[in-house]
Structures are given as C-alpha cells and as structure tokens.
Length: 400
Ligand code: FEO
Image 1 (tube, rainbow, N blue to C red):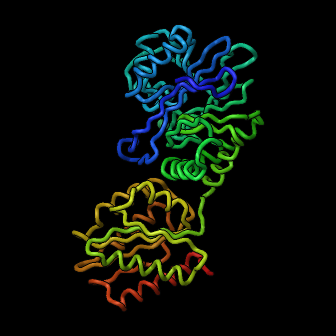
Image 2: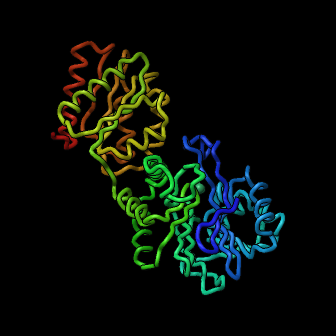
Image 3: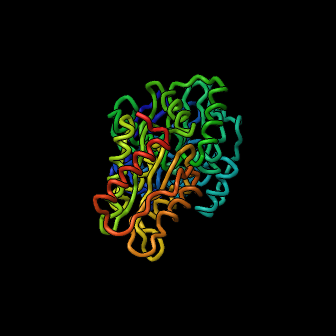
C-alpha cells in the first residue's frame, strides 16, 4: 500500500513481520524488518530501490495498480544486495526499457546476481537527474556503507536523503516514521544494526558524515531502506552514527562464554562479582553464547569497554558456539576495547590461550594471561575468580 512520505514522495515498500533471520542466518531480526522503496513523482517519476525477491510479484502488482508501470520513468538502485534489488527481474520483465541509475560497482553486482543486460546508467558523486518542477535527484557514492556499490540519493528541492542501508533498522512497523514508534525498541534496533553490520566500516562512516554535513544541504527527512523514516530531528541518527563510529564504548564489561559442566560458568559468575565489587559504576553483562542470540551478544560487546571470553577445552580447542562468535567478532574489528580469556579444564587446557589469540587478532588489547583453572571450581577457585575480576576492573580503568 502506498503511503505518503512528503509532497510527491511515497513509500511503496514491503513490511516483513515474519522475518526472524536475515543475511541467511547471520542476523536475528526479532522485530521483523521492512524493505523500503520510494516513489518520487514530479514531471518525471523515479522509483528508488525495490524489495526482496519473495515479495517481487506483490510489489510490482501494487505498483501497476496504484501508479501504472507505464508511468515510471526510471529506477534508482542505491545498492544491489538482493533485499533491495530482488524485484528488478519482475519489474524489468514487465518494463524491459526502464533505465536503472546506479554506481559502476552496482552494475557488476546486479549483473552478477541476475545475469541481465539491463539499461544501466552509471552515476558518480555529484551526478544528477532533473525530474522537473525545480527538483532533481543528486547521487552521492557511499562505498563500504556497507558494500562497495552503495550510494545515497538526495532529492534537491525536497530535502530528502534516501540513504539505503545506512541509518536503517530491522524493525517492522505500521508506523512509518521515527517519532511514531516505541523509542526504546527503535534505538535497540539501531545500535544492533550498527554493531553487527557497520562496525568494520566505521572509518568510512566518519568520512561520509563529514562529507555530507560539509555539503550544507537542507535536510528534512532521512529515508533509509529498512525500518522507519527519520522525519523528527533526522540529524539525531547522524549524530549517533558519528558517536558509534568513534570507537564507541560505555562503562560496561561483557562476559561471554560457553560451558560444558558449568565450571566455566562458575568462573564467569565469580569474575562478574569481582568486577562489581571493585567497580560499582560498571555495568556487567554475562552471556552463555550457546544460549543467547549471537547478534545480541555482539551488540553488548560493541557497548563494552572490555570483555572476558571463556570456554572449557575440548579436543585441544574451543567449544563450537564460542569459536563461531569469535570468528564473527574478529571480522567486525572492534577498536579501543580491552579483553582477557578464561576457562576451566580437565586435561590440557588450551582454550584460554586460543581465545586470547583470536581476540588479539580481532583488535582487542589483551591485558593479561587470563584465568585457567583445573577441574570443577571449589570455593577457593571461585574466590580466585572474584580476585581476578577485581584485578581486571583495575586494568580496564574501572575504579569506583
Ligand atoms: Fe539491506 Fe545491504 O542490504
């Protein structure tokens, strides 16, 4: 259903309430998502982005019924990933002459996905298309936000930035705008999205924000391709991105671990107590990674100034849930965070050393050799874990 965003600008996307996993199973979407597509109707009519392939027919049928496919003059494809380009094959099957404005990298990507030679019009930063009535669409390349092909489109004369994935959130809502939804839910989804998707590209985020702010463009709305549209103080999400991109941390420690017979869990709990004793102002969060959603763990890692990561040793290695999350954390390349590893063992006890190596490779400053204990923790071992927690609080700047 078409919804009004601004004068002559409509939302024509798809709200996906059922979506619980995104990017395969890489990203949990507890609150669903949306694939936002926009129609700008001046003397010329532009369609900005489409929707994910499962909704292609429904999307194109709606456009036919509400707008008439014959009345669309061109498509702007800000990004080629399939959640935004998935309806192109259906749309182009029915309107094969439609020009597609996109970056050179998007042409490669769209051809790679769909193996079609559509009428691609390659654009670069500063290029524009006049759409009449004194308005034009101006393109701003945004490589690595979050793919090489990504770009923003700015509606000059309408003060709307169509930012694609940047500034988005996985949040299904019938309410289209940021001021119309639960603010806690909105910000939880925003920070999770940044932590899990954009963290490795923070230097690009900083530069792009400086570039766009430096253009001094009037800005009334930021319209991303997932979640709600920022119409109330749209710069608030830009300000947050600038903060998050600057090696963000709160006064928080996240302890994440897996445990076979609860020994490593008991160490985690002892360390949590020790940190709490030594540093009353520090928020402490503990997750068993085999039981907690991994994207929620990663969001807590993003918020933290330091982490403690633990696993018992199995077959001279790490339990598989820990190995999986360490792989992801290493790829996200967090900066300005301290860390140490721990684990209880019965035979050889390699896990803490292996974890520390992974954390160091991922950019964490490993502050010491961690805590490795033999057999089921007794009262003395748990006190040693508390003492370790107190000392760790000191090493990460956790004075009361
Ligand atoms: Fe929402 Fe990069 O796709």
